[in-house]
Image (tube, rainbow, N blue to C red):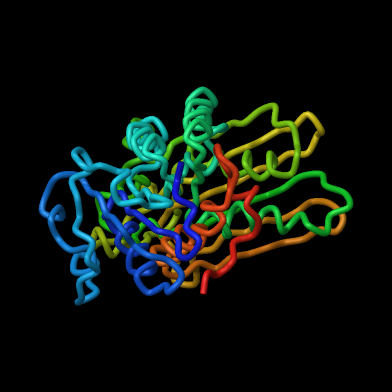
Length: 337
């Protein structure tokens, strides 16, 4: 069983990429918690002090351990923040080690937000393992407030609901050209059609599924299709260093549709593409009902926002009942100051 600290929650970090290190920087500055351990796959990060690795210019007294040989129970952590991949199946061995050692788990992963919608059988295994060890499992990150809770809050004043619409625009050029190509940027339409979209396929449909589930609806159908985003005029790509002529793919549009037994539906258009000069990253929920309402979140510094959500959920997760606990069950995210 995880140690329910009477004072400060004791945090371990598993996976020290961009999100893990940003979360470590945030936690290191938070007076209400203590970092007690850090784990990463074998390589140059192992053996370094976490503070130096995170660019803090000071030691934290926490040496990064090899995740394949570490004793996860030894540090006495209350909770482990996992930032590795979006896929439950790939992360399962990590979950098994951490939950089995009696640590609550907070995972930065799209499928971890709503395991039941991603893989019901796998979710049942994770839930059973967490309950057997009297700990909890939660997936969170920027979607916590900007997609899941924004959708729930948009429906707060409703007295009649017919349908929901969710739209998001994300800058596909915020990282590297290789990652932009995952979204289809610079591909021909034929190349886009042949792309398998393994990195992002079947992730975004979990958002409307989760929101309707949280509101108590009986979801009967969830579908997703992927379309290329095109333009009839040249569009400049700063990553490619050239103008992309009409017909060349600017990104991907993921269209998700959810139906319920009660008749309420949700449609989502998620675009990961090159932004126009007058556009900014944002997420919008609109309610067709009474009253008709909209909630829009304009996103800045998504790395810090996602990492902050991980850390700010620590008190909720440490106090939660054993098993899978969705962010929609834990209440609106609050600052941990």
